[in-house]
Image (cartoon, rainbow, N blue to C red):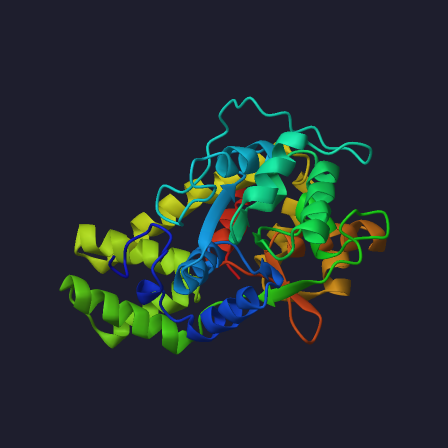
Length: 345
């Protein structure tokens, strides 16, 4: 698999720039610790999780809520396969197919079919990918708590996704959450440092036989700001177009379509709103403190605080040590500026 291949990496040999994170996550899995991977979109959480599972040679299941939004049904579908597990690979996503096992789960009753499958399962690592889109948060929490309490030696969960909806009740559970009191480790995945991004571009160009200059690497790093997903997409487009300027333009165009789809999905789930886009629009003018944003948007403290909290949990904005806010993704910033006709800062 080439560095500029846009598919999630599942072989540790091809996971670039994440040596420390891979070792840390692998160690947690060996100790049977459940882990929540936190970080901006396209930062490489899925690739990191899959590579850690494969590095240890463990059985793995990927439940991607973009493929199946029913956690129990997807889990049963995976466990019901003849070998009781799936080795992580490019086609390891579990489809939402009809199955003849009752998976209703309440405080008073447990799904007997699922219980049988859990009992007979081998040691398995389950990746819950994009967990925020799984339906029925209460059912997800309750089943996770049940597996944690009774099958901890057999099952280790790695959870990725934005800390909203279901993910929020797992990342920061309240006393009413079924998962409350369970020890789940949080692991922050940051953007690549500038030098890692530059090295990635250089190595990818060498691998593909593409023209490379330091000026090219500096420009791409500046435009894409250490986000592995966008840097990889640029590399793929560069290998197709052979002209770096065309590749950057194509990358921005494709990124805008992806971002537009995500924002539309957020609005469908009543998470996004025009008020939150107003906050993002204000931040296209540059990094701002809370008081500056309040003046810019006209929102009261409570409203602004709620919207900032949601946007931060979605990974769209970040807050630094000085408590100043900024959009975390340069292409998201460019999209918001274009969508709203905001001037360049």
